[in-house]
Length: 198
Image (cartoon, rainbow, N blue to C red; front, side, top):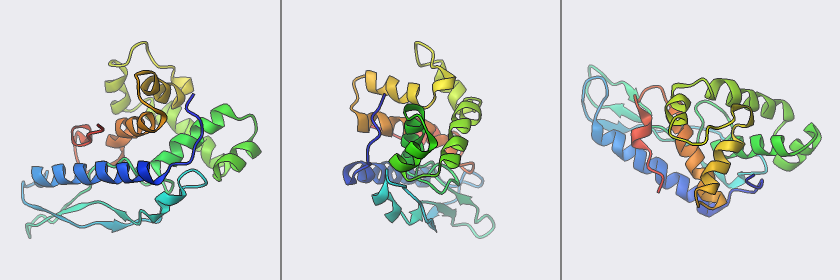
């Protein structure tokens, strides 16, 4: 299993670069509703990283775009590897805290290791096993991953699979965030095509 680690500046910068690239691709595609030009219109966030991604708390802006045509003006928010939708905690913290809860025996140990309340981590574990496992994104990717993943062990089985594919722990974490990123937006259809994890 991926060891519970602190997400450093190098990984955080990698996540920023991936989000910026996805934003540029969405902007180049134009407004999904009227094909008008999209302009940057980021909005504020106050993310938490727990003890796992403290540096990520500096991510105070969520990249977003707004249509430039007067009659439309709709927002198009690109998928993100930093933020998991509306969750307050950063995506990396959600994954690492979920892994810690699978590895550690008690709620007190999880809280001490991650800085995230055990009840919050418990909700995330249920989301991995129900919300994520039942999502269209997971169903599409599940057929491409052999042997099949154990849903009861998500996200550990997913991260381990990326690690076994020859990626180091940081790359396995980022690839997992990339796989989950289409779930971080509802305003951009087929968000997976905009996220490129190299």
